[in-house]
Length: 99
Image 1 (cartoon, rainbow, N blue to C red):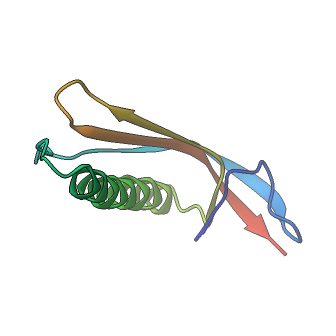
Image 2 (cartoon, rainbow, N blue to C red):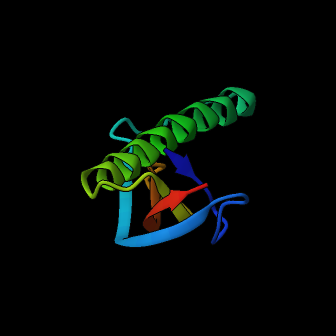
């Protein structure tokens, strides 16, 4: 599965548009403020990476369900809430591409 933020894949041709797919993930565990800002930022980074991976996996699963072999035009939106939760949503167009 090819995932890209661009609207095309170099060397490939889009032969069918399957539809818009998305993935959404929110961390359940809230990150607590600590006296060490280094620890806080490290915890935020780890949490954001985990949430982003889950959102992309959901996007890919939704594309596979449509029998697509690529997702183009992916938009990533990362939000931090006032309660220190991280939410990541990804949206793109599921397509079938050929060389």
